[in-house]
Length: 120
Image 1 (spheres, rainbow, N blue to C red):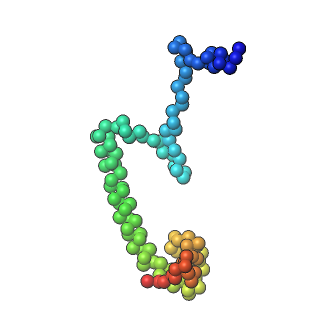
Image 2 (cartoon, rainbow, N blue to C red):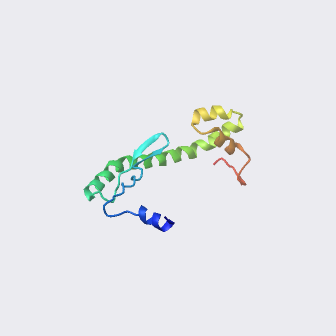
Image 3 (tube, one colour):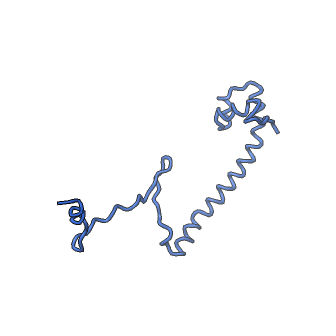
């Protein structure tokens, strides 16, 4: 029996059916959380609108908090630089501010990527 004959024997006939291929993964992991994927193209408009309304309030609150955090960072960064100049250990500054020690260390360097760091 040659290769062509074996190939024809393996081909499906109308009487035989192949088991369906496994579907793509319907969930994914991001960090320590596991999320279920909801296929959106098949959802009716009311369900989409409901999904948007469920996240809209939280999204607006998150954006407000991020803007507020940026304002706090603008005020806090010069004070961190003053603390570095005064000799406060990076670890202590990190404990008090929530910044990483490496970020504080970079800010305390005379140059940061070729640009002078200034406290404004």
